[in-house]
Image (tube, rainbow, N blue to C red; front, side):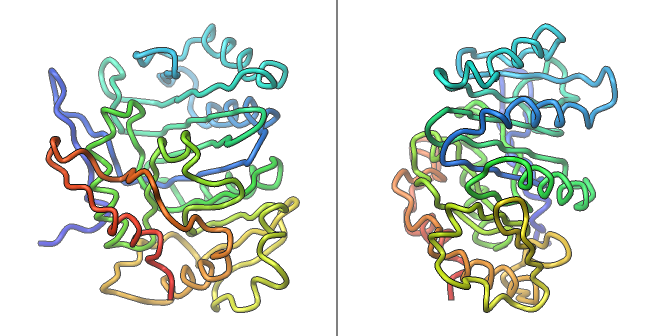
Length: 309
């Protein structure tokens, strides 16, 4: 029996147990060409507020090799390092998660939230929710944050929750590539592409179920870019930008089952094509052949072009 998209998880064998390092999820990705100093603490606090009191939460950042418990003292530290005053001179990159896994090792089994905030270039926030989360929850969060904060663009829909440490999440990369090609509505994400500037300023790597285009990106689209949206695509002004919803709810759009959802995604893709990333240069979704995975740049490029006519 052929597995559906939501049955595809990536596993990694650790010293004591096998853990999930890439799990199908609802994801929201918010990108800013610069700034977001004013968004960091509110978004972090609102993410934490969704959990009942005493829910175990954990965190890590780019100066440690551990995942640690998010204690009240750690929360105060996060508030300090992500204060707008501190971010004007020093970038910060943190990852947060809840976990039912003993010891909070880097396993994907719940919610995650990460943010890279800089004062000048390439800031982003990435949120993952369990697949069973009601899509309305993702929709409400996405529209609220896009209306309030200065994103260059944002997308949300179906994707993967990823383990944070690069060596741990690597087994998920080929899985994302295969499913991203097989199910066109599923997005791939590679932190290294973002951190190294692979995503160029004011460009987006894909369209998704939910899409937001900020004012700077709108200028690049030219006059009346949304004239040919398919029936069922919701368009509305939101904050200083435009919100596009490709259909009633997320759909992975099996390529053997083309339907209205795929047509809606394709029409949104056509509208936003002028601001989309044109090529990968890092081969970010494949792993060194020594680890058992072949590098296939053409397939990576094909994912970028999968919704093009």
